Length: 200
Image 1 (cartoon, helix red, strand yellow):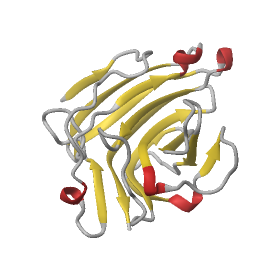
Image 2 (cartoon, helix red, strand yellow):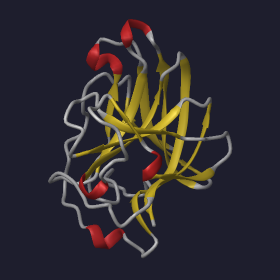
Image 3 (tube, one colour):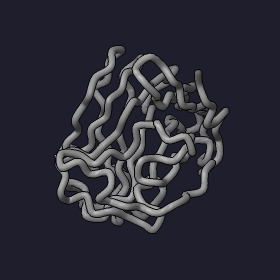
Image 4 (tube, helix red, strand yellow):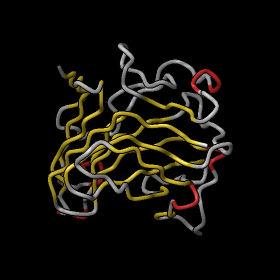
Protein backbone atom coordinates (compact mmCIF):
# COMPACT_ATOMS: atom_id res chain seq x y z
CA UNK A 1 0.00 0.00 0.00
CA UNK A 2 1.21 3.51 -0.70
CA UNK A 3 0.05 6.98 0.16
CA UNK A 4 0.81 9.72 -2.36
CA UNK A 5 2.39 12.80 -0.84
CA UNK A 6 3.39 14.71 -3.95
CA UNK A 7 3.05 14.39 -7.69
CA UNK A 8 5.35 16.19 -10.11
CA UNK A 9 6.49 18.59 -7.45
CA UNK A 10 7.54 21.99 -8.76
CA UNK A 11 6.45 24.31 -6.00
CA UNK A 12 8.44 25.57 -3.07
CA UNK A 13 6.43 24.03 -0.25
CA UNK A 14 3.47 21.73 -0.36
CA UNK A 15 2.63 21.43 3.29
CA UNK A 16 2.18 24.01 6.00
CA UNK A 17 3.99 23.30 9.25
CA UNK A 18 1.70 22.20 11.98
CA UNK A 19 2.02 21.52 15.67
CA UNK A 20 4.83 22.23 18.07
CA UNK A 21 8.20 20.67 18.70
CA UNK A 22 8.72 18.73 21.91
CA UNK A 23 12.40 17.84 22.00
CA UNK A 24 12.41 15.49 24.95
CA UNK A 25 9.55 13.23 23.87
CA UNK A 26 11.44 11.63 20.98
CA UNK A 27 14.88 11.37 22.64
CA UNK A 28 15.57 7.83 23.87
CA UNK A 29 18.98 8.70 25.32
CA UNK A 30 20.96 7.54 22.30
CA UNK A 31 19.14 9.22 19.44
CA UNK A 32 16.40 11.69 18.55
CA UNK A 33 13.96 10.17 16.07
CA UNK A 34 12.96 12.78 13.51
CA UNK A 35 10.70 10.52 11.49
CA UNK A 36 9.85 6.89 10.86
CA UNK A 37 6.84 7.75 8.64
CA UNK A 38 4.41 5.90 10.89
CA UNK A 39 2.12 8.73 11.99
CA UNK A 40 -1.33 8.50 10.44
CA UNK A 41 -1.73 12.28 10.29
CA UNK A 42 1.25 12.66 7.94
CA UNK A 43 3.38 14.61 10.38
CA UNK A 44 6.91 13.72 11.37
CA UNK A 45 7.92 12.55 14.83
CA UNK A 46 8.83 16.16 15.65
CA UNK A 47 5.34 17.34 14.61
CA UNK A 48 6.37 19.14 11.42
CA UNK A 49 5.66 18.08 7.85
CA UNK A 50 7.90 17.36 4.88
CA UNK A 51 8.26 19.89 2.06
CA UNK A 52 9.01 19.10 -1.59
CA UNK A 53 11.33 21.15 -3.80
CA UNK A 54 12.85 20.80 -7.25
CA UNK A 55 15.17 22.98 -9.29
CA UNK A 56 12.10 24.29 -11.13
CA UNK A 57 11.86 27.02 -8.50
CA UNK A 58 14.99 28.46 -10.17
CA UNK A 59 14.21 27.56 -13.78
CA UNK A 60 15.48 23.97 -13.86
CA UNK A 61 13.89 20.97 -15.56
CA UNK A 62 13.89 18.23 -12.91
CA UNK A 63 10.69 16.45 -11.84
CA UNK A 64 9.84 14.42 -8.75
CA UNK A 65 7.16 12.60 -6.85
CA UNK A 66 7.15 11.39 -3.25
CA UNK A 67 4.93 9.11 -1.25
CA UNK A 68 4.79 6.97 1.86
CA UNK A 69 4.96 3.26 1.03
CA UNK A 70 3.94 0.54 3.48
CA UNK A 71 5.99 -2.59 2.89
CA UNK A 72 6.90 -5.74 4.77
CA UNK A 73 9.52 -3.85 6.80
CA UNK A 74 7.23 -0.96 7.64
CA UNK A 75 6.55 2.47 6.17
CA UNK A 76 9.14 4.41 4.18
CA UNK A 77 9.36 7.69 2.33
CA UNK A 78 10.01 7.03 -1.36
CA UNK A 79 11.28 9.88 -3.54
CA UNK A 80 11.54 9.29 -7.27
CA UNK A 81 12.09 11.51 -10.25
CA UNK A 82 14.18 12.64 -13.17
CA UNK A 83 17.11 14.84 -12.22
CA UNK A 84 18.25 17.07 -15.06
CA UNK A 85 21.22 19.42 -15.31
CA UNK A 86 19.47 21.40 -18.03
CA UNK A 87 19.09 25.13 -17.58
CA UNK A 88 21.49 25.21 -14.59
CA UNK A 89 19.33 22.82 -12.60
CA UNK A 90 20.15 19.50 -11.03
CA UNK A 91 18.25 18.56 -7.87
CA UNK A 92 15.10 17.26 -6.27
CA UNK A 93 14.61 17.11 -2.52
CA UNK A 94 12.37 16.41 0.43
CA UNK A 95 13.08 18.71 3.37
CA UNK A 96 11.95 18.41 6.98
CA UNK A 97 11.84 21.57 9.11
CA UNK A 98 12.76 20.58 12.65
CA UNK A 99 10.65 23.12 14.49
CA UNK A 100 7.52 25.08 13.68
CA UNK A 101 9.07 28.04 15.50
CA UNK A 102 12.55 28.17 13.97
CA UNK A 103 15.39 25.88 15.05
CA UNK A 104 16.46 23.25 17.56
CA UNK A 105 19.63 22.80 19.58
CA UNK A 106 21.25 19.61 18.25
CA UNK A 107 24.65 20.23 19.82
CA UNK A 108 24.20 17.19 22.07
CA UNK A 109 24.30 14.90 19.02
CA UNK A 110 27.14 13.79 16.74
CA UNK A 111 25.31 13.57 13.44
CA UNK A 112 22.41 12.41 11.28
CA UNK A 113 21.60 8.73 10.75
CA UNK A 114 19.39 7.48 7.93
CA UNK A 115 18.12 4.00 7.19
CA UNK A 116 17.78 3.95 3.43
CA UNK A 117 18.21 2.15 0.14
CA UNK A 118 18.37 3.49 -3.41
CA UNK A 119 19.38 2.94 -7.00
CA UNK A 120 22.26 5.10 -8.19
CA UNK A 121 24.63 7.02 -5.96
CA UNK A 122 23.91 10.73 -6.30
CA UNK A 123 22.13 11.22 -2.98
CA UNK A 124 22.88 13.69 -0.19
CA UNK A 125 21.75 14.97 3.16
CA UNK A 126 21.49 18.76 3.38
CA UNK A 127 21.42 20.70 6.62
CA UNK A 128 20.27 24.26 7.13
CA UNK A 129 21.10 26.30 10.21
CA UNK A 130 20.66 29.89 11.32
CA UNK A 131 23.73 30.70 9.18
CA UNK A 132 22.21 29.46 5.90
CA UNK A 133 20.32 32.62 5.13
CA UNK A 134 20.07 32.28 1.34
CA UNK A 135 17.84 29.67 -0.35
CA UNK A 136 20.86 28.10 -2.10
CA UNK A 137 23.03 27.87 1.04
CA UNK A 138 23.36 24.60 2.94
CA UNK A 139 25.72 22.03 4.44
CA UNK A 140 26.06 18.83 2.45
CA UNK A 141 27.23 15.24 2.85
CA UNK A 142 26.87 12.40 0.36
CA UNK A 143 24.91 9.32 1.48
CA UNK A 144 26.84 6.09 0.69
CA UNK A 145 23.58 4.32 -0.04
CA UNK A 146 23.17 0.88 -1.68
CA UNK A 147 20.25 -1.12 -3.03
CA UNK A 148 19.97 -2.92 0.32
CA UNK A 149 18.55 -1.40 3.50
CA UNK A 150 21.37 0.06 5.56
CA UNK A 151 21.67 2.41 8.52
CA UNK A 152 24.17 5.14 7.65
CA UNK A 153 25.68 7.59 10.12
CA UNK A 154 26.76 11.00 8.82
CA UNK A 155 28.79 13.01 11.37
CA UNK A 156 28.08 16.73 11.59
CA UNK A 157 31.84 17.34 11.39
CA UNK A 158 31.91 15.90 7.85
CA UNK A 159 29.26 18.18 6.38
CA UNK A 160 30.67 20.70 3.90
CA UNK A 161 29.39 24.26 3.49
CA UNK A 162 27.93 25.00 0.05
CA UNK A 163 27.33 28.47 -1.40
CA UNK A 164 28.24 30.19 1.86
CA UNK A 165 30.78 32.78 2.92
CA UNK A 166 33.35 30.91 4.96
CA UNK A 167 33.55 27.18 5.54
CA UNK A 168 33.67 24.96 8.54
CA UNK A 169 31.22 22.53 10.06
CA UNK A 170 27.61 23.51 10.75
CA UNK A 171 26.70 25.13 14.04
CA UNK A 172 23.98 22.67 14.98
CA UNK A 173 23.00 24.58 18.10
CA UNK A 174 20.59 26.33 15.68
CA UNK A 175 19.64 23.50 13.32
CA UNK A 176 16.63 24.36 11.19
CA UNK A 177 16.09 21.51 8.75
CA UNK A 178 17.31 18.21 7.32
CA UNK A 179 16.76 17.27 3.67
CA UNK A 180 17.09 14.16 1.52
CA UNK A 181 18.40 15.25 -1.89
CA UNK A 182 19.07 13.66 -5.27
CA UNK A 183 21.23 15.76 -7.53
CA UNK A 184 24.41 16.84 -9.30
CA UNK A 185 23.91 14.42 -12.23
CA UNK A 186 21.49 13.56 -15.02
CA UNK A 187 19.81 10.41 -13.74
CA UNK A 188 16.60 8.72 -12.65
CA UNK A 189 16.40 8.97 -8.87
CA UNK A 190 14.76 6.38 -6.64
CA UNK A 191 15.45 6.44 -2.91
CA UNK A 192 13.54 5.03 0.05
CA UNK A 193 14.11 6.26 3.60
CA UNK A 194 12.75 4.20 6.49
CA UNK A 195 13.96 6.42 9.31
CA UNK A 196 15.98 9.56 9.96
CA UNK A 197 17.37 10.54 13.35
CA UNK A 198 20.03 12.46 15.22
CA UNK A 199 22.51 10.15 16.96
CA UNK A 200 24.88 10.58 19.89
